[in-house]
Length: 335
Ligand code: GLY
Image 1 (spheres, rainbow, N blue to C red):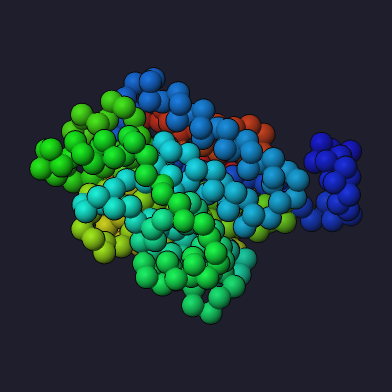
Image 2 (cartoon, rainbow, N blue to C red):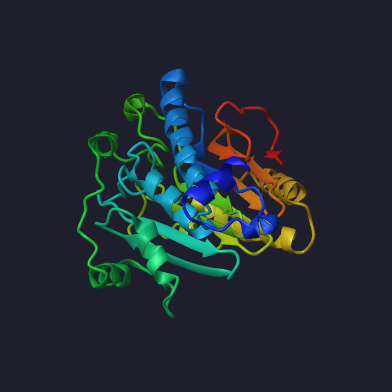
């Protein structure tokens, strides 16, 4: 009996449907942009991402569904102050935090999301609750009202580091276009523009795909700016493939990147070809972003037009990541 079968037996879950099962696959990201500041930046990011991959994969190994795994992964990434989503979100130009998140069930091909929500811990929980509503994408006032209806506790996602970053920007007269993608002490005084978002893509043991994406936005943006993360441009899935994007939202929207890759696969292209073609087109248009994806056959693929993609994955055998992938290649994959 396999390790998974033994775990299922212990949990009282039937092993009779094992013949229909596939090996679960998982990839997550914590942003994309320019390179991390040496090992001081890389090691903690790697540790965070790998620990989250491990915990979510454990759920998948115990027959957790793709949707359950995506929600758990997004919650864990939102709760990690290092990443720009949930706790640790960047501040907008007026010093406020407004977060956006989306969830897409590939099997049902159903999208739900919230745009510019404030004062909650896990925006992905609102996206989850909206999956079964007739109105499935809510913006600021509507999402606040919905959050009250669900009796979600009021929560302040602000961290000291993000506040210091914003105060420094104010001193510099907001001459930087974006806040840092990950919260690092050294970043407060750097001029480097970085971009942050979190995302989770899953193929579960029943062969079902799901994807979730969550962000605090670009940081320092105009009030009312809408992120790609709660649009099909940044988060999309069908029964054939699922994609989550990170990077400059406007670039992702202009390429309609997540939907573009998924539709190419749905129409018959392989995932690695679809990722490569979409990234090559985007690179020629000087776009600045990254994407992670999985197809129904279990291929995991990632791509970037920027310097670094903070992604980690479990291919059914081992955990690996893309943190030190700085070559000029536009995509990579693991089957
Ligand atoms: N990709 C996150 C944003 O631009 O808001």
